[in-house]
Length: 191
Image 1 (cartoon, one colour):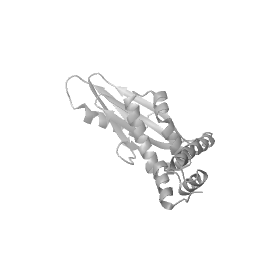
Image 2 (tube, one colour):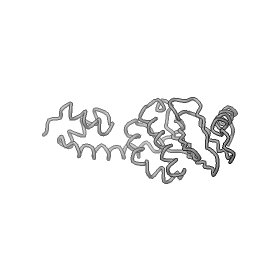
Image 3 (tube, rainbow, N blue to C red):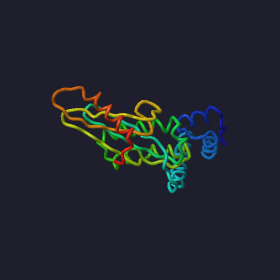
Image 4 (cartoon, rainbow, N blue to C red):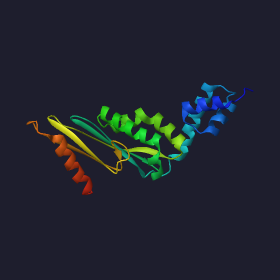
């Protein structure tokens, strides 16, 4: 049996973001084989994620990504609001918004592209999570402006608004759009 050193456990943890004891157990089960331990943790992560999938995920964050004439807004839910403070979760939500912008808001394509990463995140954090909603806006001549309320980080918060404005005159639509988006967030619209 191979010796399981602290540095080997740390290396596996750095690769997988799994807990220290999970890493130690995986290395023990694979006789110190780092790559086999990564595979084992990935399989265990799938099992953990499947067990958690029936639990309700009604908390979470929204993120926005805009690029000139296009914008995407994504809501990623978790079981508790404590997860919103988790840096890994925050990075995932921001990445989901960027992917949503690239894929023009196609939620199935977004979920397919991020499914493995989401499964690993569920296994690491220990809560059910899902990409709940995606909105995408684009305009021919104009801008898509955004506003994020209760901001945790740039483009990340609890209430997000996208506003598409068209005008061929070249007016400063970005500033006007942001102010309109702020008013929309304040009025708590139904849709």
